[in-house]
Amino acid sequence: MEKYWQKEIETASRDEIIAIQNERLPKTVKHVYDNVPHYRAKMDEIGVKPEDIKTIDDLKKLPFSYKQDLRDTYPYGMFAVPMKDVVRLHASSGTTGKQIVVGYTQHDLDVWDEICARQLYAVGADESDMVHVSYGYGLFTGGFGLHGGASKIGATIIPVSSGNTNRQVTILKDFRSTILCCTPSYAMFIGETLKQMGIDKSEICLKAGIFGAEPWTDEMRMQIEEMLGIKAYDVYGLTEVMGPGVCYGCSAQNGMHVNEDHFIIEVINPETGEVLPDGEQGEIVFTSLTKEAFPIIRYRTRDIGVVTRGTCECGRTFAKMSKPRGRTDDMLIIRGVNVFPSQIETVLIRCGYTANYLILVDRVNNLDTVEVKVEMTDEAFTDSMTELTKRERTLHEELKSLLGISAKVTLVPPRSIERSTGKAVRVIDKRKLI
Ligand code: DLL
Image (cartoon, rainbow, N blue to C red; front, side):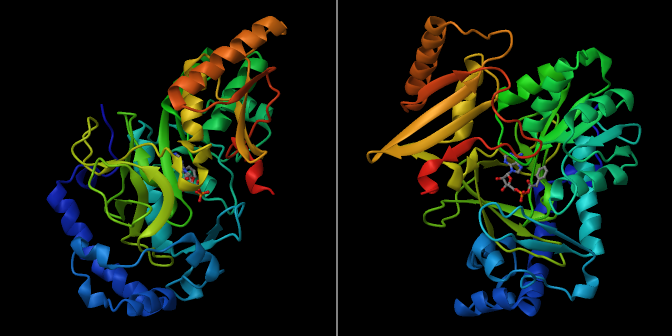
């Protein structure tokens, strides 16, 4: 039977959801206008006053915000409450530029716990579960986010954090963890390690996993489910908006529900900024409705997805965001053909390989080149040159016919591609390194 943490709101009617949003949006806009000079300046620039925002239909009058705004105001320029009311800081990893810092009041943390609790209930967890958190604890939001949710539902938390994979497996088995929280690539690594340590999946008690923080395909989901003998669910979020739990996967396993009482989702055309109707693919934009310390207005996530509304087969009525295909800045343009790493992943897994791969992009004599390195499994390993060439050619043809790219395919031995304990690095684009 479907479990809900807060059934009333999670299955509310569209009118009820809109009424909550209409009540909360004007308050948030006033809060940022009064307390964050950046938002006030941007609104003044286009002549929009808080009184002009009466309902969610007025949202489109507000300017977008960008990661660059958060960098320009580093570290605390976007905070909307005095520092004495901020009880926690988190930060983005800062791999692609200056890191950004976000803050939470106690109320913000309570909301975050609630939405992560909704996620845990949606995968069937409750107080009788042992929640094994292998997302990193620290400035990254993954560890503390799911930890807060697990604490809210009264589960037993095993706060392992990431790394030391053999130890993770021992704990998983001996402590009888039932819910695993980590990135999907780390879940695969844990699955492989289990096998290497000679432990059968029937010897562990895991029943579900809550995986997110990076793009992963449905094909990879099935591979993880098979390896660990569990149901794998998607969770989405980002530091700037809150952390994990902004959107949560449910028993339907196709897309994630947006916590619409706390966030408004829009999908826009990334080139023109035009708001797109439900069902059309575009850039995901979020506005927070209840955040105190770090409210965010029309934040351009750069993630590409689709939003649909209606009652889900799980009974929830919150809007649903498709699995993000990737980020606008992850899209590879190979000799004019646009391709997301996730599309390459789908082809590889459908052809019988695992999600252990690396995409190397370069430019040679003014021509883009792409090489896909993909690991063979122990079972499928061969060192026969004839066989390798044959398999590489087949995969090359598949990538060409399905995605239109001409990639050099190199099959590499098992375990030769570096594993990740957090977000996996799938692409090395040498064109960006020059
Ligand atoms: O990754 C928060 C998080 C932690 C989400 C744990 C889920 C689980 P950031 O480090 O700021 O925050 O990275 C946010 O990661 O804009 C997406 O591009 C990507 N992302 C997050 N979840 C998913 C997902 C955390 N389920 C960025 N599918 C986002 C695809 C995801 N991409």
